[in-house]
Image 1 (cartoon, helix red, strand yellow):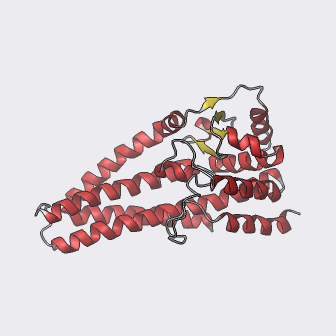
Image 2 (cartoon, rainbow, N blue to C red; image 1 turned 120 degrees about the vertical axis):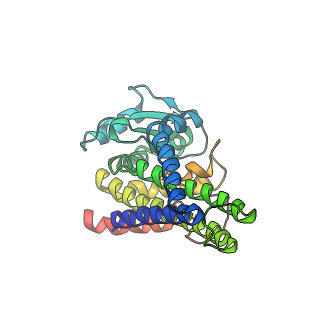
Length: 281
């Protein structure tokens, strides 16, 4: 079901993108917009992982580190190649995976995560990240974020053009163009967040099956959520928030319901993992 949702939402994002480009400048505008987002996706595909690791000052772990050994143990249960393993020296506990495919994957954990979780809980977190790698979630999330960002960029141009009489599509009233430019980026952001939430549920289930015990990740999620509310991860950005196992901005009490969440609520994730116990036992 989550895979079907993801395909649907990515298709919807593409439809929104083409619609907003066509509304701005007809078929020519749509073609230019597609070329722009194509270039953005090319960069994101090949360089987003390096940019992300550098942004968070991630340090490659040696092969004798116990976290590396946990990753190696979990990898032995899968058909995945061994990813690079990094640590981020930050007191706020969190983790993420990056890389365009399993052969170019990396898993990063913060030093704060190692301070508060026991080995079983760490295993649950890493299994979650390996599940993201297995299902190409990083690539899917990057595409969704890039397309949503391109939609917002084109929408800004549409608003400016409508207000000052620009644009080639004279069949659309400027007021209508402004409304389209406002509504569609919001819709795109909602779709992007929906893609992210769907992939989190899948990764949670994958972690439970890989470790054989959903309680490992349940306990880890509970601790991570509690600590994340106490402060923000250093250098954290809204653009990369969807990458982490727990939203690094969990401490910000913004009440928009589930529409603009990058992650499902931790309570819902724990509840779903609880249901898996009956299947796995």
